[in-house]
Length: 413
Image (cartoon, rainbow, N blue to C red; front, side, top):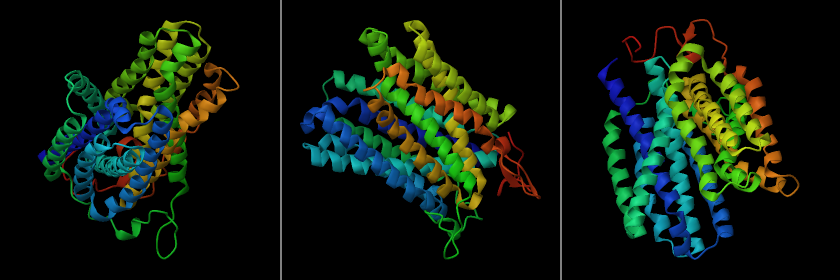
């Protein structure tokens, strides 16, 4: 494997870790920021929707922009802007200022999310084998690192604006340091592929139905992930009457299993393919969450949340990879469509489950994500692309030119 490709992979790991670390630093400081801004939980909930809206807007912009300018330009710029914007919530002293800060933070996060995933797909294409899930695992590890660092500095009563500014400065340096190792824009990328709406008018290409099908799968699976993020601990506390300390282990079991699963998914995908990963993973998630919904025992519920996380762990990276490989000239735009709709699904998780709990118990409301996981398992074959003549299968079934990845004359590792 060429040294330049290994360095590009390391740089991509750095970008994913940076993204997870920055978002994690914001999350662990939420209670302090909420108090500083003088707002309650209800207002914070609405402001988190502003964060999500900013992220969605950033994703929609960054995809076509990455196709036009290349990841080497957009990824480090997004990383610098995201890191610099980390300090803004810490400076907010009112709801309007915090809302504006979260809008900027979310927008920059959306830009980095799509651009780094697009670059990850480009690196995976050059490698010729699945490697995308490991990048997502490093994102999770970045969040773990942020929780450890954040807990320490909070125990020392450090100034929140000073802490976030210092961590943001570290992120800026990391983004700039990784920039030279990122791959340049692929030579066949064209401006005609950068239509953010895929209208098909004025010489712009229409979005294939398969991309929207992948986006729909991302919406369903990431909605299920959002349910785990927001309701796993509450399920143990409210349904099974678990102590608060024990209930916290529900999300811990889910997130740990998801991280471990993403560390091993690439090797499994290389052997069995993306369709098998999504079909078996979503099926496993269905069984895990169904067990959570029906069990009266706390230990089995914890196991169920872990199985749910393990099942979901490899699914979304396969969707991003399939979208990026579907059309090499519009990789960024396609990733932005799948990631954007998936992100809306994650935000919709609390919205869907919350109102249902007014009519049925929380464990009964979990039937919605159970059915969505089952539907995703049944629909997994959408990841199997039709290979045109002159194309050979690329990473886990993607189509690539029979002459091999552009610019890579070496064999795959």
